[in-house]
Amino acid sequence: MNLKQLDPTKKKQHSLQHSPEPLLSPPSENVPEEIILFPWLKKARERLKRLRGRTRFQLDKNPLSSLKVLIVTDAWQPQTNGVVRTLEVLGEQLKEFGNDVRYITPDQFKSLPMPTYPEIRMALFPARRVKRIINSFRPDAIHIATEGPLGMAARQFCVKRDHPFTTSFHTRLPDYLNARTRFPISWGYAMQRRFHKPASTTMATTPTLKGELEGRGFKNIRIWSRGVDIKEFNLHDRTYLDHLARPIWIYVGRVAVEKSIEDFLDLDLEGTKLIVGDGPQLGELKKKYPDAIFAGAKYGEDLAKHYSASDVFVFPSKTDTFGLVNVEALACGIPVAAYPVTGPRDIIGDAKVGCVDDDLGKACRGALGIATPEECRAHAMKFSWEVGTKQFIENLALPGYDEAYWLESANFPD
Image (cartoon, rainbow, N blue to C red; front, side):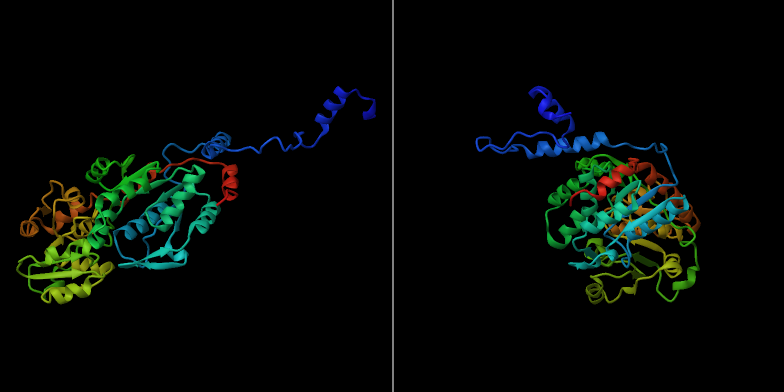
């Protein structure tokens, strides 16, 4: 049909039907370009459009297996502390349940040692690589364990893409910073609140810690308890340390200012004070307390033998959120002496397997001989990694996003 034979109205309709692009008004000097007065409104509109367009596949309500779980942590080997040990065992347990686990850790990035804490490596500019790892793995659940550079990068990824994630409260960073730099504790907790706020769930080790965090304004707190490897930490030969004067008071852990080890070393106690561990304060404390025994870091069966052959485990820290070493000591058959703070108070409870007191010396004397090795171990058996791992899985946020979500995520602008 010849377009010239069409009347003007039909010609216009025909053009609209067959034009590959919509007709636009010709530019005019009298028509100003569109000015976006509220850019945040445009972003919100685009975000809502993405959310409406997403589909989810159905996941079991309480799955224990066949999940792809990503764990992001700035604390990792070669560090030796409760956080690293907890995350290692968590991964092992998740795999035993039949899940696929992947970690994002500092050893996968260029990094620098953290000032005053050189064992912690700070990943440099990790955001793009974190994005690639997540998009490649396509996890069912993302758990961010720490508030460092890797944790921040993973948090940014999830917030931008509306991907739910969980976090855990492992460390009282505000108290650590205050002990080292006098940085105000209230400012530190405000920063931590901001970090954890977008999380679907923040996991805490004990009911006491949960209540404390809620009192500080944290939201969506759920319990994720800890356990002990009862095969590795067992009863051993009590005579292993008989060359030392008894009673033997043992501390196991990082030798650093936030652990308040001087509170223990300043006590007037008969027998031997034994320090097992390494850290930045080791040289200073060796010079200041020449009568104490500094055995260095111990691992595996050697560590269990040191526990079992001692008389009381002393835990002077006031800043730990749990204190896994308390359960290890009990599993090896020795009672615990500690301040009445989160961790020891929850672990010991009303059981006669230790003593907590604001006077640490009184707690030490009260714990000496309070229970047999068998009674201490029986109490430690109540703390199971299997139970804790099931709690962890139940706390996870499982969005069930389909292929289209990950394609969108891979092309999402940085």
